Image (cartoon, rainbow, N blue to C red):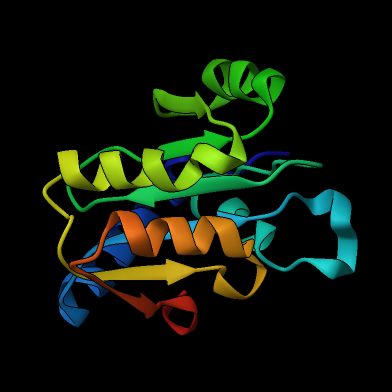
Length: 149
């Protein structure tokens, strides 16, 4: 049973309000799928925010206030399924080595490539992805946003 769109949109509005209140330009959420079981907690944030589970694949959600969510998934078949099932349009297949570049492009296009950006899932983000984000967005100050969710 999925979470209804009214609830999800309300949650995103709350997150946008919290981002604005904290002076953050955007939010990036890294999540491993639930197939890892107790070895991962990050999939719960994706399920809570947009009702997404990457199952055996990592995913990244990018939220910029006033814009539709953008979801990156490393499984081409899940990206196809996501485009069919998700309540927003931007679901992309991106190989994990390219996650950082894709996120940087999204944030840059949204006008969020400097300043403070909230981040959730840092403790489960693979080092190459994290280092790629930091390198691609040198003017961003990454701030742990986990407690706010």
